[in-house]
Amino acid sequence: MATIVPRVFSGMQPTGNLHLGNYLGAMINWIHMQDTHECIYCVVDMHAITVWQDPKELRRAILDVTAAYLACGLDPRKSIIFNQSQVAEHAELAWILGCVARIGWLNRMTQFKEKAGKDKEAASVGLYTYPVLMAADIVGYRATHVPVGEDQKQHLELARDIANKFNLDYADAIKAAGFADGVFLVPPEPYITGPATRVMSLRDGTKKMSKSDPSDLSRLNLTDDADTIARKVRKAKTDTEPLPTAAEGLKGRPEADNLTGIYAALAGESVDKVLAQYGGGQFSVFKNALADLAVAKLGPVGEETKRLQADPAYVERVLREGSERARAIAAPIMRQAREIVGFIVS
Ligand code: AMP
Ligand code: TRP
Image (cartoon, rainbow, N blue to C red; front, side, top):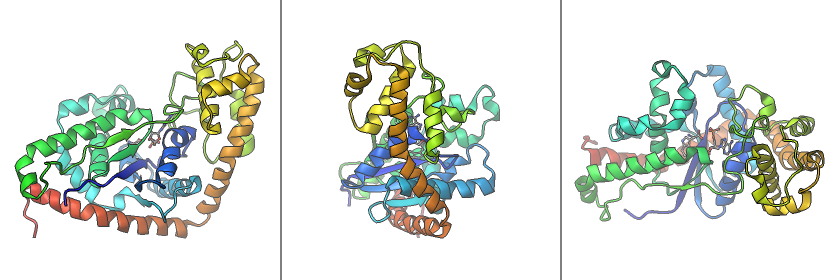
């Protein structure tokens, strides 16, 4: 009963297009892990509404992100693919975990500070407790590995702290429920790896590539067509020096660092190898090569996303079936959680 099985959980918010940062920072690992692990991939629609979303647009965005998941190579025969709000256990467990987490812990979350901006009083309560829901997403499946980009590291540390505190606070009840090792909620391991765990904006190498950046030129969207990709790469900010011939030469040159990192990640090569080929040469030559590579890698994903967007019935079916499978895992864990906390479960 208490054995811990390796299990992967991760999610993305349905707020706008997926971009190269999502792809290189997280999705590439998600795809690979399907062949080695039991994987659960979520479209976190409940996280999306922590900032205002127009209902019609949200509904479309959920289908679009799911279409992008499938187009990137997530396979519903291998993985569970679903949207968060269809499995009520996420919200229910989040309540309990919200009573375990401390306000001081949440006050340290840098993403809240960034997203809430200057007027914190006006941010939604949901935006503040966002990382508690994220912890519930993960520990509610007793997931062991969470592939994400670098920006989610702090949230994962919080999820570990919450799981550990729950196990301590309820240690006696957890033992009585048959967990001899005292581990009911499994502290998840972040899986943050790959050559581009933090992809930066094409307009400013010191800012993260993000769907909330007002400039569309700052990111490569997975649905951009070939001309748009090529134009954005050509317009990407660079400095005036030629590319260095080795990775140390990228220090203090954020744009050069970012573009070579992107190239290396897309090509599956090391940065040194990329610089051995393009170092010393002009940026324009490298940018043409990068544009061709990005078009070759992202073009087919965009095409397949568009094909799936034209078949919403299929995408909805994937989410429905995925939700049923997710619920089958989450429901018995939630039932145990209720018992451990001392609720009457009849
Ligand atoms: P989000 O779009 O915020 O829901 O993020 C979904 C996933 O993509 C998370 O694992 C993020 O860490 C990852 N991610 C988002 N932006 C970037 C970026 N610029 N570089 C690397 N990973 C990213
Ligand atoms: N907070 C994550 C992000 O913005 C999305 C997310 C929600 C998530 N729940 C999760 C990621 C659980 C991993 C596991 O990127």
